Image (cartoon, rainbow, N blue to C red):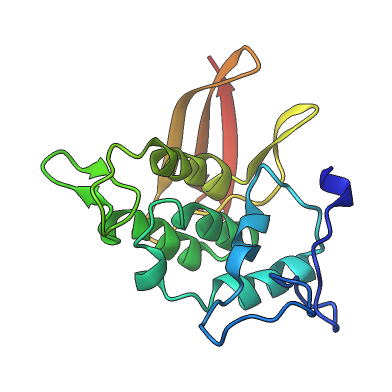
Length: 193
């Protein structure tokens, strides 16, 4: 099914479109709409770096963080998208929306679906937060031959390292670490448990 999906592309081939050009839409600022979801690891669409960057510039970057952060599932595809394009600063900003968007409610920082409601505990939003760490900053993807580095790992400025402990995958357990070498290069390592 995935190989047969129709995802329209701009006439110049620089980015995908949220709808076929023949579909009218309101004048409301819709931005790229669902295009941010193309970056989700579960879709794992094969794109050239140029098309990947074009989709990011068209559909993700223009969305105001303050508006998008009001939904707890909105940060993950955008932060993963930024990480896939190698933009650590944007990946960190989108990731930060998990904490500044108003979806964590006192007294226990229970995650809600949106900033404007109290539908807690919203597990899907928490799952998205975890996917951001596993698939965004590490660049890892699920493939036939296992959990592989499909994109270069990124770390937000000021982070020395990120360690994900005891990730279980196909019966194996591992620790995954993203850190900076002495020369500043971000690198990924895995250690079996």
